[in-house]
Image 1: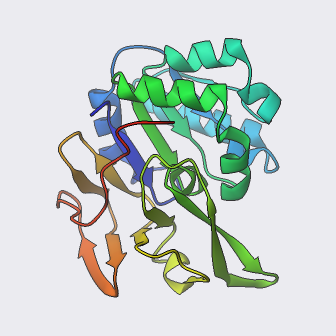
Image 2 (image 1 turned 60 degrees about the vertical axis):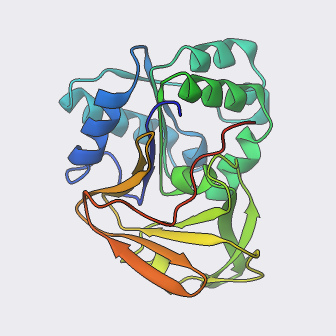
Length: 236
């Protein structure tokens, strides 16, 4: 089903991410590569873009910015056309709620999904990974940062929410009003859960932790990650 799909736990575009990013590049179809800094809109997105460009240049890949910052941008036919022709698309970290709100139901998002289903690589790190799932976890009560509530995300990985930065932060999160059947996927920094068409596997230097119905299972790099639902076969 489509190209590779990569959910990274954070601290993207830095040493330690080589295994999953090389796999992403190798398994993606030919075509332009784009970094999408939507989630970093309020956090110096130009820095996120420059960091991504330096990182991927070191891996032998030229990557350009796809400047989708608002829902007006996401409705642009020109930007959607670029996304549709992409060989690789990477959603940066930042604000997970903002990313999902900006892209959900838009022309640009539909084009990204269509590109992925046609063989393009699609990746997200931290907020980007969270937004690719059915649910993204946003702050529930200020200033208690550990309390999170599910908000509708982009829905590519059904029944799932990502806990990014798992070892350093995400393992302390509590999820209020947790939807029935929700699978939580804790992903350490510089670590990814990677869909390769046959299933999910862990890549990188840390752990992928699947929490489902009270059971917690840890997976190290190379191991198949049982319990994570397959990406949605239809719909944006």
